Image (cartoon, helix red, strand yellow):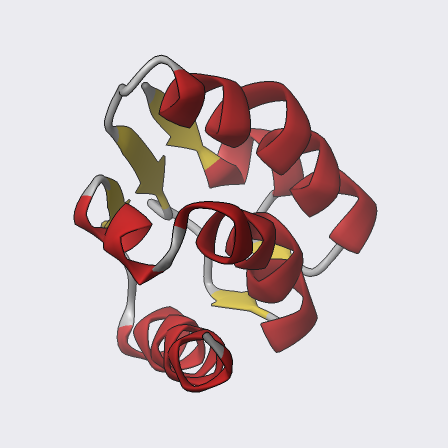
Length: 95
């Protein structure tokens, strides 16, 4: 499943409620069907740690860090990449 973050959030991905909706309605159901999840960050200029945390932390908590083998972050600029890395590291330390 490919999910365009920009189409949902615009260029600033910061709304935790939208991240929660993506997680509940798209990411978790796709993972339950053993589908790959592609999170496309094309045109997203910046995001917040809280948005990324709300987007993926529950999946990591429920499925373990191995879920990151089927969740792909595509077309991320350097700023977005760094924020994703921070959240992923934090979640892996907690698991």
